[in-house]
Amino acid sequence: MTDAGGGESFEVRLALAQKTSAKLREAIGFVIVGQNEVVDQTLWGLLAGGHVLLEGAPGLGKTLLVRTLSSCLDLKFSRIQFTPDLMPSDVTGTNILVTSADGSRHFTLHKGPVFGQVVLADEINRATPKTQSSLLEAMQEHACTIAGVRHAMEEPFFVLATENPIEMEGTYPLPEAQLDRFLLKVIVPSPTEDEMTEILVRTTGRDRGEPPKVLSREELMILRALCRDVAVAEPVLRYASRFVRASDPTTPGAPDLVKRALRFGAGVRGAQSLVLASKAVAMLDGRAHVSFADVQRVAKPVLRHRLIRSFEGEADGITTDQVVAGLIEAVATRPEAVQQAMAR
Image 1: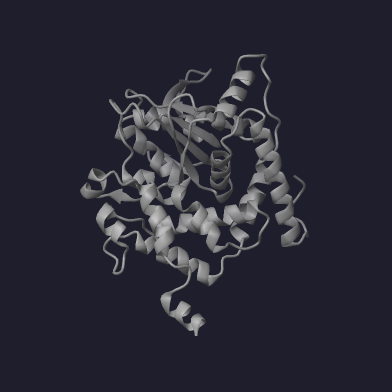
Image 2: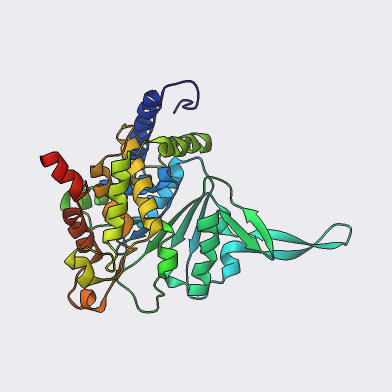
C-alpha cells in the first residue's frame, strides 16, 4: 500500500484501501481455504480497531487463521494458551528481581504475552475468571497496570480469542462484561466438501511456506484512521440506535420475540460496535458512507454475544442469531412517522 495520508482525496484513499484489503484477503487465502465470511468479519474487527472472538469446533482453522493474519501483518505476534492453571501474571507479566554485574539488585518488568500487537488468546474459556479478567484492562484501555504502574500497549493492539463450544466440561464461560469488550463474535462453520478436499490437498503435501507480508504497522494505522472517517448519515445512526433499543425487552414497543426470548438486550457499546463495524464494511467496499444494509449485515456478529436469553428463550431453543434476524425484519429503517409522511 502506498502512502494514503498525503494529499490524495478521500475517494482515492478509499480505492487504495479497497485494493490493499483485497491483497490481504488474497494473502490469507494462500493458507486458509474458504471461510470467506469469517475472514471478512475478522478484517472488520482489525480495521475498526476492535477485538474479535472466534467460536467453532476443533480443527476448523481458528488458530491457523490468526497466525496467518499475523504473518500478513508486519506486527509483533504473541500467543497465550489458556489453561485452568494459568495465572494472571502469566498473561500480563511481573516484576522480577535482577542482580547486576556490580552486585546490586533491582526489579525489572518482565512483560507477558499480552504486550504483543496481534495477541492470540487461544481457548480463552479454559482459564479461570481471575485469569480471563487480566485481559479486561488491556482490551478496553490498551494498557496494563502491574504493581501499581500503568504500561501502555504498542499500537495497534488487536486481540483475537478462540473458544470451543463443544467441550464445555471444565470451562469457564466468559462473563458478559468481558464478552462486551469484543467488537465481534464470529462463528466458524465446517467446510464444504470442495473446501475439505482442497484442505487435504494443501495439508498432506509439501509445505506451501508463509504468506507474503501485506501491511506494515504504519499502513494499518492509516487504514484504521480512514475507517473512522467514513461518513454515517443521521438516519442510519438513528436506525442503529432503534435497532439496539429494540433488543431490550423493557423498551416500549419491543418485538414480541425479544420480550419472550431475552432477559437483557445490547447496550451503548453494542450500538457503537454496530456503527464501527458498518464503517469497516463500507470502507472495504470502497464506499465513503454507511448504508442501512451495512448495519444489517454486521448485526449478527456484533450483537449475538451481547444478548442474554431468558429462561423461556433457552427452553424454546431460540438462539440470539434468530432474535437478531427477527430484529432485522421488525425494525424499520425509517421511523413510522417518516414512512407515513413519505407515503402521502
